[in-house]
Image (cartoon, rainbow, N blue to C red; front, top):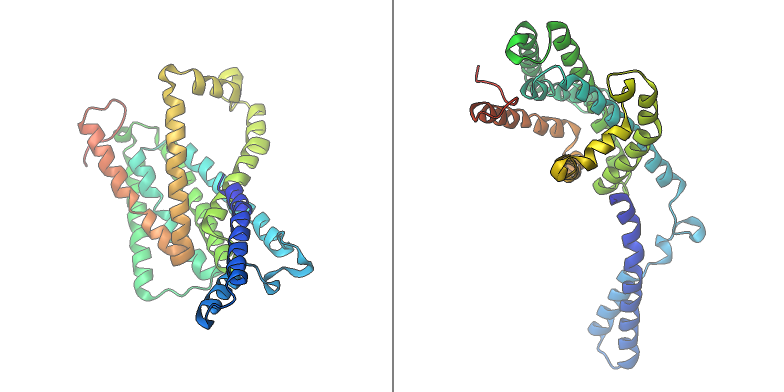
Length: 308
């Protein structure tokens, strides 16, 4: 929707601009006795509103150039990264608690720092490396504690905990690559605005999900209805036929939350960089932990975990 609106809004604005230009020209024609300052002011308004020939692309076409079209197609790369990372995180979440999941996602900071130095040419100082080392130690301690005490989390065996944590860490490496790609595109391509990037990623992600992931999941064996890895027909049945449409409402609410999250996150990436965005994203660990405590001590069944 963001992508389509970014293309449609300039077209809708053209008639208003043309009307404004005609109004200014008529005013200058009907009032030839206007003083120099007023005349210059109106001319400046016309020049500022009406596109000049110098701003026209080569060949006189207002359509996208080869460079801009190629740049928009390249957004498919971080879109694929996002899709793969989301799948890996979702599988890993099956075997760990939400608080462990969020704390393990702090690994994105480590990988974002590495990729920023290797691929974006950024320079880190000793203090930065000390902070990264502390993050590695903290993430390792959380992972080891979860593996050594699987009965406390009650989400899986030790082997399942290892698999879940490994998948989450791998997903964070992929997601760090994604935000580094996004920073590179937005800083190297002037027309690549945050809303356009989010819109294109949503478009490409939807196409990849519908044309590749879901068809493959229908074929692979699994525990879903009909012995499939994913039965989309059954999923749609649950979404639309659940009592009070609670699943549908939850999905719509989540979609709007993710929209604002992605747009604001892309703004941070464009202005401050991928590494700073990764640092900000680690703060949600504290919020997830506090919510988990509140739900556990609030006697919310099946959710939350105790202090300690």
